[in-house]
Image (cartoon, rainbow, N blue to C red; front, top):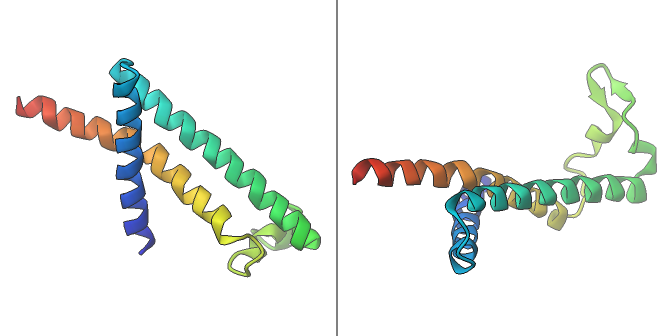
Length: 115
């Protein structure tokens, strides 16, 4: 189910990015810069919100020291509901924006080869 969501969001991000680039009449390469930059910003926001959520709701797990060999304390919070789902959704959207650039590049190559 998450894979389907990422695919839908990726194609939505690609469409939104292309629409903006075409409306502003920017060159084609600007699309790739735009969607990758949006993806990176969303990824950084997601990480900031995850760290903030863990520090607020479970401060004893907000460190990078190992609880078990090869497993840091903050990793033990996965799936416990400490991080809100909307924060995780921002992370999924950031992945979709980062994946939108190579997918569109591949589609452009296919369109070019078919001509």
